[in-house]
Length: 171
Image (tube, rainbow, N blue to C red; front, side, top):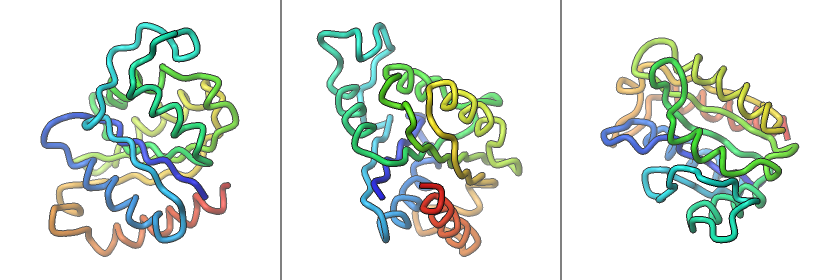
């Protein structure tokens, strides 16, 4: 399976990147993976959809190529103010037809005990409206207790492995 992992926040000091790296490491055991991190890409505020832009930003062209390439787009995003980050919505809004029938999966992240479930619900609704096929999800609670530069808790290693299997079955 060809898996695109989209890291949906550019915030400094974020923990979401650590979660995304753990997800990519697990998925790369059995899938081809690509990584698109909003922190490392210059995705400007959207003025035109890609399909209506004669000179789109380079990062947007790269993102579109990866979306076309993948069989499943896995969004890894935190919950900010009871939803997902605006930078992620901006990136998603550049494309439309490219999502038609595309499988999506979600990993939502929070420092508290709810694991970003409100963000997950909103992502489900948005990707469905974009013509995607909402699939498996993983809610990461208490991210600071379970992910660090030195590693991932055993509980979340197991949960990420199970999530990978669910994604494979969904395709």
